Amino acid sequence: NAGVTQTPKFQVLKTGQSMTLQCAQDMNHEYMSWYRQDPGMGLRLIHYSVGAGITDQGEVPNGYNVSRSTTEDFPLRLLSAAPSQTSVYFCASSYDTSGANVLTFGAGSRLTVL
Amino acid sequence: EDKVVQSPLSLVVHEGDTVTLNCSYEVTNFRSLLWYKQEKKAPTFLFMLTSSGIEKKSGRLSSILDKKELFSILNITATQTGDSAIYLCAVRGNTGKLIFGQGTTLQVKP
Image (tube, rainbow over all chains, first blue to last red; front, side, top):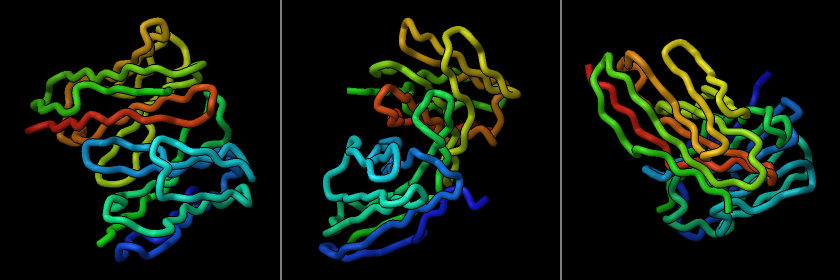
């Protein structure tokens, strides 16, 4: 089992460029989510999905798009990167949204926007 | 709106001390509260709490939930330098999403 796989691990962008952070899980998890982590801010939820074809906004969705065309994949798109999006991004998933499920994290992607 | 508040935000102790980390929350139709430890990488799972008053324990770490007062505590006894980390609390309500608090940064000095 690979668990939750995020790519790339590191990325440097210029302001205005676009990119996609990839997230894939092989655990047949229904719930997938993206967080960003900034110093002193904990983990802030960007977008989440409770199943294929269903996505919803989290706490800080502006500037990011997501889609969930398959159960396994949940890419995060930055359409026009801004320096404020410099952060560490984590993808995380759980089997479903019941109270009995633990969130499993990917290794993280460090993004720098110049 | 779902909300999780952790306190203190940072803490410095010496090896052997006991620490108590706090997590209070507001969420619609509570499902679970989770504690994670984060060193210089992805968070790792510590505890999941769903019922009030039942202590979860793992070695020197323990946690308990009070659903009436809407908080949880994480206790670490006989702290070691390896306990230095960010401790994160997260809550899941009826929307299914998990919301995290700001985290508590613990530094344990030799």
